[in-house]
Length: 489
Image (cartoon, rainbow, N blue to C red; front, side, top):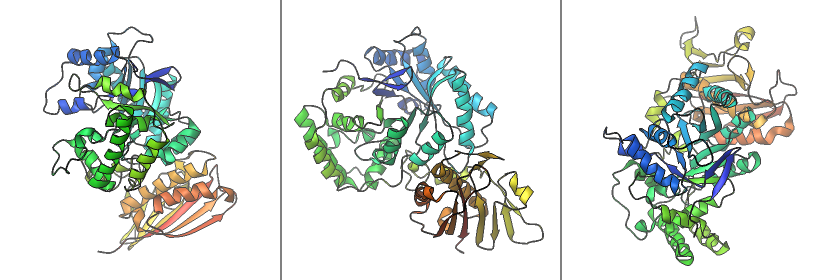
């Protein structure tokens, strides 16, 4: 049996445990207003560290987790034996100026008590607000200054990870949900990781404890009191319900008995064996129900062809979780701890503002701030009655920067986000779009652009025209315009 977890290189100079201790439960413990004594918390983390579980994951909103980890880090001199600390910055969407980004990062440095953050992960609520790229570019500058060791993302789909990479951001990791129930990360995202070298940090691998012997053969619970298990019950329901989930448990239990391990070990092993996965994240309860010895069993066996056949047969009876990784935070069905997030997303201010057209009662328009709009005399979008017309849109960030030069697919992803942001203040959504027109610089790049279009409009299915337009002005590979019709109540 392995006495310590396997290790892997996440980024140059950043060797980590393949079982990362997640500290999200600190927030749960402290939710009633009590605060964990940081030295006592550090004692619990030190016990994990001494056992080889020396990599910890936390966030700005995980209660006092960063402070507790800071107390732990002070106990170790610089060198190979010092624990690794990952944290996340999850700001509300808004302008990401140099000062705002640096204040957010410097707070993480201060709470951890370090001069450099081993891995800083970034979460962004809505890609319709383009400032996420501003934040990443500023964090990249801080990485070059030595304040950040490696940059990561959290809950980002393949299209936007690809966009960040194409725009020159050096991404080491993406933290996403990945389990026997939620298998989205095994698809397009893993394919991109194979090409780019980005690694996945997988959370939710045990579905909040639902992937264990405890639930095998048990009736469906009528209610669930805690947020974490409520979240993963939503995943189970979306994947087909209780019986398909029980089929997965039965298959995993049979495999577990064959290898002399636990059902949870099988669930973790299945995720860890994916090439894109650097590590899985396991909950640390700071002294409560730690299960360190059982977790180590994942390294003493491997799944064979017969095991995979059993699991694949169980998977066949389930429904795929819709969308791509991270969609559960941004669109229905909202599969989060707090459930439906539409109220939260609706409260985020639109990046653009609608204004009335002088002398034209009932007509509205939107400007994106591009330098070309006032020069050429046009609006980004105009609403007339229940029709919204969006001008030909390129991957122009801010006033004049071309995003992802040379990458047509990444530019299309950015453009479609920009179009969605243009529709929003005029009372329209992408679901209201009835026609799209795509102009390509090079017809040979039709496929990545079409795939980006399909990700957004795959259920809307508007009328579409795609043509090669020859040289577009500037370093742009693609330009897209749309028309939307808002259904009248």
